[in-house]
Image 1 (cartoon, rainbow over the protein chains, first blue to last red):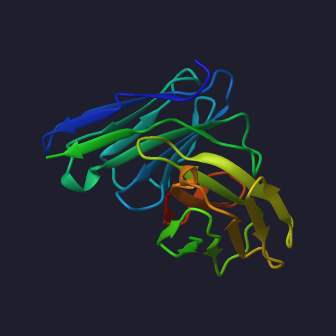
Image 2 (image 1 turned 120 degrees about the vertical axis):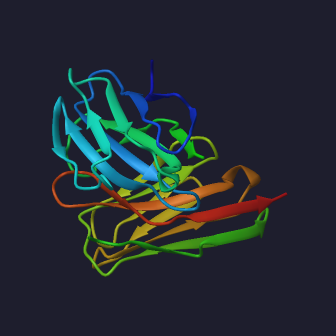
Length: 115
Length: 111
């Protein structure tokens, strides 16, 4: 596709369930970022990949959060034992390289609701 | 961690009015970006400012980067209902390229 796609668009989980969120970046984009956007807030950085290497995971809020990009294209953000505070929109963005100021193209996000 | 503060948080105006949104930080940023986000969508980049004192214009939108590269403003002239949305400023942290976002300004332009 022409842009970044994410699936599912909406996910409802019961507290304690594991969830997996998928991101398909723009073809050929080296850099991939995950952000978390709580209601009424700006996005907050979670983790960064350059190709298949996870170079920064400093924004992951706990060890229940895990991200991977095994072949340097599609990425999955996994949340284990979900909690109510995990409810948010999870945004994926890709960029052609990691140069500062390079435009990041965002997907539509996955809205996660934990009951 | 660098922080970006945006003001106002909410803005409701009539079509045809002018408005300014501010983005301030105590830290220096190598670049600042402005995004617009509509409900159910991801942010879309409007502009990137890199040089202190830089002014960029995009139709009715004027963006300015402060001389010290700690603050930025977005001015919209003759706002239209189509300008309604969440406006986010974001700075690049360190050399990694991940973005630090402000909390956003939710703009509503009434016809």
